[in-house]
Image (cartoon, rainbow, N blue to C red):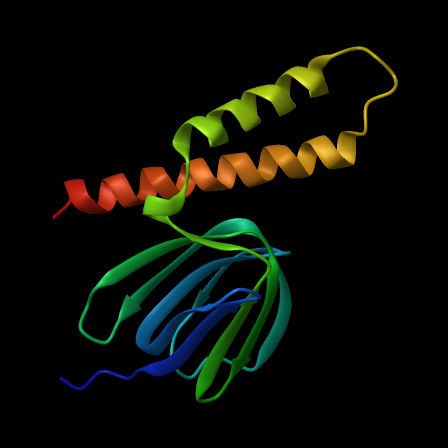
Length: 143
């Protein structure tokens, strides 16, 4: 049975992370989780901190952390312009756990001088990194 693919390019300001044909992409947009397959309607949306999971044409699953950016879907291509991209092995688990704990503690303080938006963004980034690590662990367990 034939399968269809679409070209995916993931780039950050520092480097090109991935360029190749994929069967599907799951990514976190500003309105929630998005699932994109070949033939998807054109789309332009902001990305929020979260996971990008894609299946390559040879059925390899890749999982990345994306800290925000833009997603453009066209009939023959998908472009992810990410603020920050990290591969699972580049995520510092202890730093992510510490950032999560620090943000939660600050949010729970009763002091009125707290910048909740900044703390919520820090918490979202830390939780997203931890989710990417967990997803990668599940991927290896299921093999």
